[in-house]
Length: 500
Image (cartoon, rainbow, N blue to C red; front, side):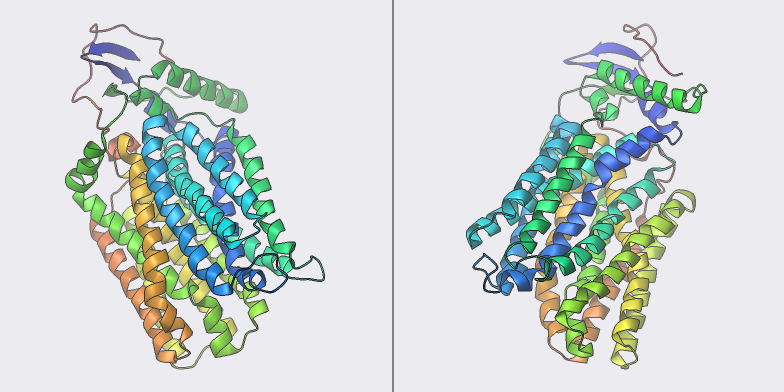
């Protein structure tokens, strides 16, 4: 590693990104996955439980003077608003203050808000802490995805990112089953069961928070912000740990990067970079997030209403059906994730979007013909969402890796907020009346809208997706602080090199 003075900041040449990317998979990487990635299980648990216990909260004796419509309407809207605003607020700070500081703060916000939701005594209290829970979760998306992509080696980045984002649905399975227990008054009193579900989320968040203490700051972020000595210590420590685990020396890293260090990048620079220099990539991000948001709302927004209206499924039993399609969502990224690193991003992103859209068109046709039962409709949804979940998870991966290092968290936050707003605001406006009307043609139209937008996004991906598989983040998108050429040898002091 070499450094040289450069105006108000320093110019540094480092091989740290190459050293991180050449690391073999190890126990240390599993620590990162567990410490950072498991929060999506909490998000899935949170969202699913609230939807399933809405009826119980509105019943006399629940301990909360609230209606079912307020739970699924205003409270849900506040959660979405909190997630969108939290993503943008914390996303900017993640790029300025660092990944670790923010993924500790945002999880603490989530933990506190969830715990306080459990002791709700009035509607205003419940609404306030639903907003703050979303505020914490929104910040998690920006802080976690940026940290994971910067710590996981390039050859594994795609599958790991997809698996982690897909784990939301593992939480949804747990939320569905947990709500069945929470709603059973033979097991728990009416005013206790729903409170314990929120308390459980807070306890799980506390466990994750304790694990996260051992996750380091991103060395890539440290390099850019003038803390290269700290970055060197972290990477050297990781290398020693992996060498001890494997009982052999790591190969020498190939390649280096020259950066002009500076404390921060302005918001204007971020906006110009994303929407001017990388216009095609921004268009890709828009398409992927809007497509998946509408497909998911076409299916999940009226999920319970479709089953109860057309197939006479009891309201208390819809959780079992939801658990089945949640498993389909989880297994998609889990089983297809490796292909995003081997077959490649462009082929896999476009094909998962197109396949899920075409399968939903087929489901709409079968539904219109009256050929489906509650079980076979759920099976069709499983097939659709197996591919759609992998595609939707790849949307987060895409916006995380195709923009420069200095804009990464803010880019994730922006596109996450866009997709969440589309799903939480446009979704109810477009799909509520269609899926709850009891008219077959209306539900078919809802399916067709979601399918059409998903297919359109797939075509955009076929044309614009970036071939990012197994490539360094710095190769996919050159950092804004990167120098045009390396510092000539002898222009500055040389620091200790640890390339093993």
